[in-house]
Length: 158
Image (cartoon, rainbow, N blue to C red; front, top):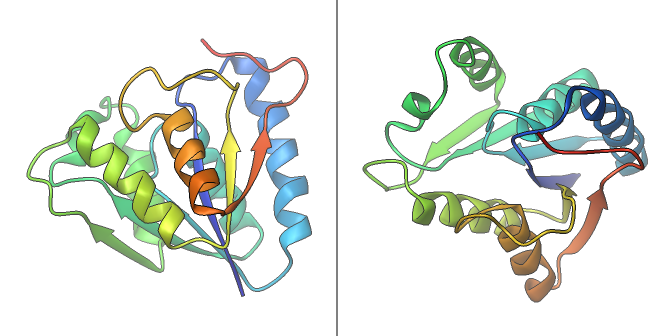
């Protein structure tokens, strides 16, 4: 069993979504079975990853950064978060009372600490806030976790 952790940008341009999905499919096909994916289900790349793990018949684990995390999603985004969370084989809520950058950083660390390999949909830029994709990639690399960056040619952020 290989546990694949995930981190990635939330704001991807429309053309980038298709590019990223194709790249994630290729990466996950290399992992083999049984596949376990772990992420926080943030809008954007996290949810693309979660859907691909499930499409590959893998099992999904979710690290929820805090109590009230669901309230950070726009009304239109909550149904997909709820649907994916309901399909997770397991999930745990970290002991942060409210969403915060510290909670997001702790969630990213928990994902890395539980993973054999980290996939990152990352443009290579530093994190915009504490716990962003760049921070999680740096943490994984410092811990010696194999990190595979997915940023297809032509990809862009909104």
